[in-house]
Amino acid sequence: MEIIHLDDTNLEYWQNHSRDNVMALGFFDGVHKGYQHVIGCAKKVADEKNVSLDVMSFFPHPKTVLSSGKTIVQYLMTLEEKAKVLKRMGVDRFYIVHFTKAFASQLPEQYVKSYLLKFKTVHAVAGFDFSYGFKGRGKISTLAADSGDRITTSEIGKVACHGEKIRSTLIRELILNGRMLKVKQLLGRNYTTHTKIRNGQVQHQRQYILPETGYYDVTLRSDFYHHECKVFVDHEHHTISFVDQTILKYFRNKNLEITWKRKVASVAMKEYAIS
Image (cartoon, rainbow, N blue to C red; front, side, top):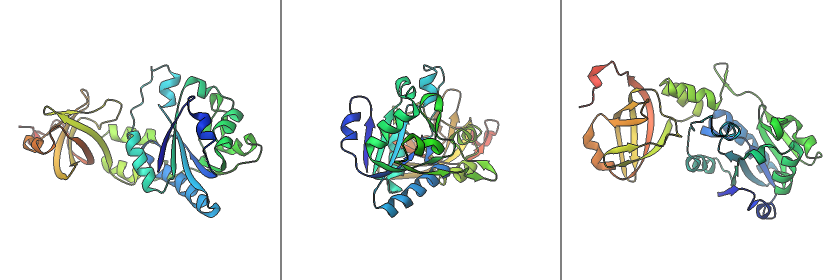
């Protein structure tokens, strides 16, 4: 899978180096079951038309850009992890548009022309609440008209779990409440984070969300090491500590993947106190 970061400096180049495709549109944070449905539909159409399956997303989050940095959005996954998941789903190209205020100010027709028609998109797929263009006036329901009926579309309705729409905002709320089993239901897999241990300390980037304060069962992976253990999260200080400090020797100065399984105790439960 090709990963292409788009901005004003290379937009024309990739417009001229595109090929017929079905484009899945969205932010795709977490690539949860709702987004999986969007990509699954796009893949089916791409296979039927015998064209490329592409995904177009954007970064950073629009709320952060449009608020001039006043609104901080914590992400469910890194762009690298998002790319890995998309590759496993059969995506051929992953476009990441650099989101700016100028990009957001385009008229809907301008966006469709510059980022879909000139990219040879023949069919677009997005959720019913996806929006584009100035003040989000463009919707998947208006995209065909905005393209002069040159692009056909598929609109994905609400994908729900127990009657509630699956969305990244809901998953973030569940993580913040330590409800990791429910998070797994909505993601279709365990929640994972990526970090590094340096000088005995876990260096976790603040732009990626951690669960609420408490003790958790997790799986640690790095290179050839795999370990089941418990960790303590101090959400206020955005830190992770190991209940068993002896395992640090296996992961010191290494990139570390943490798979979050379930919350096992709150701070008040002293039987899990860190020695």
